[in-house]
Amino acid sequence: MSDWPGFLRTAVGGHGLRAVYQPIVDLARGVAVGYEGLIRFVDYPVANPEHWFAAARDHGLGGELQAAALRAVLSHRSTLPRNCFLTVNLGPEVLHHPAVRQVWRDEADLRGLVVELTEHVAIEDYAALEPDLDRLRAAGALIAVDDAGSGYAGLTHLLALRPAMIKLDRELVRDLDQDEAKRALVEMVGTFAGRIDAWLLAEGIERAGELATLADLEVPLAQGYHLGRPGEPWAPVTEAAQHVLRRHHQRPNADTLRRLVDHPPVVHDVSSATDAFTDPAVDLVVLCDEHDRPLAALDDRTAPVPIVAPGLRINVDTPIGDAALRTITRADWAQPLLCTDNAGRYVGVVRIPRLLHALAGAR
Image (cartoon, rainbow, N blue to C red):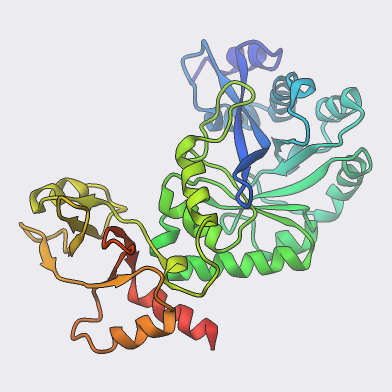
């Protein structure tokens, strides 16, 4: 866009920059313990922040624009709720920039601040970052690695920086409740985070099933639209997310099917399944009667009419081993278990691959 130089000169002066804040939630307690500060560009023909920062790098104003964004986000820091931290995004390529260093000098005390190193530019020399990272740590800030598991944020990146917080890439979180391989990878990163004494934070949670699975995996921190959208300071956790976490923590501790449950969409007539399958993330729909008793699992979105596949109904508090013994008597192993409560009402489904994975883990 030919007008970028003029827009950038205006923006680096702080004009048209608005800070918004997204809650970061402690999944063990269901409360916000931090906020990520994000920047929005208002009153400009281009609103996408990624386009702005890419244009700033192209025009040699990357450091100045990121410094202006930091000042906008930090302007509300004094009102941050007690015992909450604030995370800010910063490209490692501008750590040494004079405008960025001046922001830290003006703030002085950086306790309660987490600096997320973003992954838009590859790091060529980790040693060159150390002086600035050491100054940030000495002033009280913590260092986080953003989007771990994608782009440049590989194992070398994590080993070199030894961050205090690791943020999982949202692609690892998307449909986590339906993908056993993603669960395994999240568990692996969680183990690594524990070994280096770092917090693990999952971002991009948009569905209740993803949130419940992260709680099952004991991921400590999470953020995403299902927990709270970016907005004015300091928004609470959504009621929908609190409900999911309360239900999770009220479950019995026994090793039962409850910890394996997924929550695909529910319909009460077969024709409604067609609409549900328009969502690419949906590969399964559960048909229930008027009393919320599960009748069947619906799959095969490619068929003109979804196939009705009667499933095994089983109490959600059944021990995993007992459920497996019942499962092996079935002719069709592809269909999930339809889990019910003590009154026979639908609770969720357990997919057979996840059941087998839990058995292998127990051994």
